Image 1 (cartoon, rainbow, N blue to C red):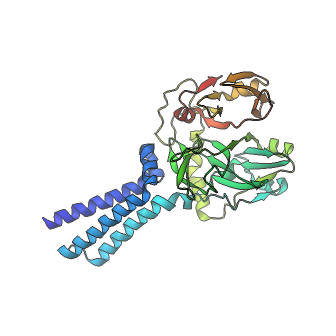
Image 2: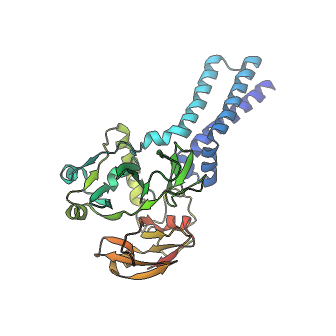
Image 3: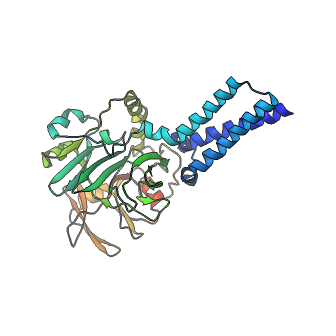
Length: 361
């Protein structure tokens, strides 16, 4: 009977440890684990680790008292549990090391040979006379690249699953942030701010455990050839790609991301989306705008590119589309200031986070 009790205890502890590791890494989303579970575990990480550690100590006590497993086997079991603790907290940041504090920027000439022909999309951030270009190919592994402008720290964040870049001020009221990859929920990136103990969903840019929200600033989506012609003096972000795992990650996600962006392929990488909003093809790469007051609009890319000068109202704002037929910006019609948009965001994921959004098409 003691052997049965011990083995059930050991199996239960092992199952919980493995499940928690799966929950906090990519495989968890393949199993469609609820978003609240991911955020809840992160928010109570030390409590769960403490409880599992106490249970592990209890297993040691029973093993010694009842003479079940030898110490070598118990040591291996202990190492296994602690590996799951590491995976829960460090696997994602290790695979995807953000460059908020150590991003490197180069001239157009230096970057020319580093932009692959198969992925020419870039995101441009204009701040006065200073312009930065972020190639999608280079931002997709680190997910975050930072810089300082006029004594303010900024970072671009990018989620390959959502095809979404978002640019923010990194101090959002809690002090200096340190943004690292926590995981994915509903095919969109979740960051953990390890300095301030909160998490941020990229699509909404809302702190999950406080009332704070980072200030989002505009970026403009275009092709590399257009960007280098328009901004010959821009600084270009390049990721070193100097780890063996970088090539493995790019190869691993290359075809899934091609499928993710395929309008004819209805499936998303992770089966966590409701996909009940059929107003657009869920793979459509929209221009989305959230006014921060509970009102949003998703603009079909063809409508945006074909309707330069089109004005519309959203809440108390009058907005205007600026387009040259390819490059699109959304501006405040009264001030002509560009507003931040979700550029190239898949509509099916947008609708998951903004189900009451208006649509323009």
